[in-house]
Image (tube, rainbow, N blue to C red; front, side, top):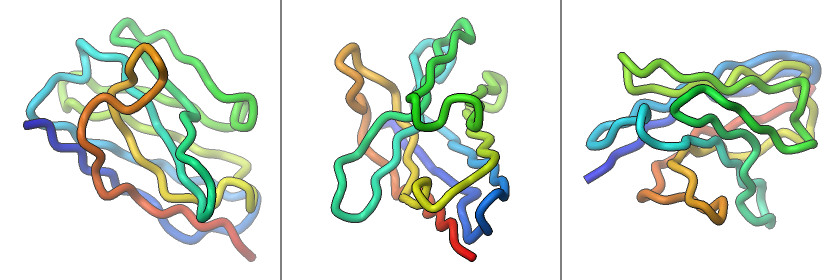
Length: 118
């Protein structure tokens, strides 16, 4: 059974930065396209960044140029570096393998809360 554990969230001021981590067990991130999703209160979960096993990345327009997704195959972990954060980035952030339709492929973890506020 695949388990995903997200960490690194917190409260940050507008313009600040955070680095999220997602440790996977039970499956290898090397052989899957992995993604970071987020869900704000009252909104649907959205895919904001993805990375293939070969390192190709793709971003939602809302985070392009501010967020960077990366992976460490040896640690079986993916990361999301988030810079220039704004209130619109406030959400619970989750990682998952990305299905061809852009949906999460494995069971969801608890996520990590990111709150951007002054």
